[in-house]
Length: 485
Image (cartoon, rainbow, N blue to C red; front, side, top):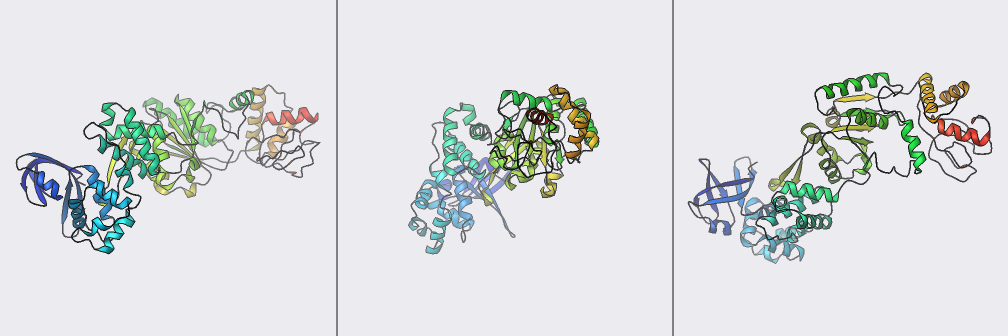
């Protein structure tokens, strides 16, 4: 793709110029006003679009990128070819085209040679809502500023933000940016993404936890203490632990971020805990998000562009991420770079954004839903298995030691036996029972555990998720007896 030409004009006609670039003459079709201003022997800069056909490679050039974007929109209209689009731009400026489309007035287009009434109406209908951003783009005093802000607004629209939000963000960022930032599309775009991001649902491990986790400071301290912080403290998953240790050791020796990691398995087996351990043992900050929170490519771009060197990014339920974000992630994982497309069709251009090296840890309960190109970009894939009863006993014994609880051996074995293979933590109602449904205390819980307090009449007799010593301690204190009694 030839996106621009800068050289000496060798020849000029009413609709064509020949530009010498490095000893090679390029013949470029241009609008009438551009051809009129071309002076033989003088230097000229053209923003170009290369149209590839079976019998020819044709270059179309424009004085500014705004006209190039309008050209790309015009040739996307049914029945409008490159020559017809060039004819429209020879008779109308980009602002006049935007005003005509906004006013739903097809008369200006009917006056262009080669554009009939039907095609003129199609231009108005198919460009509706696509050219307002160009018409509303700010016009800074600095030379070239309008072009930069227009590209940023168009890039944000392509990333999934609404036209209003994108335009307002680009204008606000340009007003606050320095002169050097306004001169660079990538710099201004990165600053604008920081304004719009981070994506909703993203948090650092030091941020307040969400509503599904304990909100009391004591509860937060307990939750943090119960999670192991190193692979040596992590119980079970011996194969995955050994491979992760090798991966982290290799990254440490080579002084680079660890390879990207995919953790697959049923809920409650420790995928989030392992991601935290990777960050802790790498001595890197950790940022957490989830697939459903990344609703379009813009959410992911805002997140990736704000990462610091070496940061660990954890995306839970990564298989639920938007498809456009998945495709952006391919290049980010391989080259630590994202290309943001501006425009469509032959006139489309890309804005490259360099990213800081990072480690992606993805977690999924349905690895089969991940596309093969994404799955192949993970340097390590770990499949987590259900825990043996002996391993669950170690988990419970460790939690008891952390909390300072004297747990009888028979109680420890009974809890492990009823945990059904994983150490997930249940919730406890105000009456002290551990349940999944409505209990007599009038509280609804989402955990699938159903160990009942003796005063609770909830009819859910089986335990399907392991529970923490904290829950056992609460229920036993309330009832004065073993919690399964």
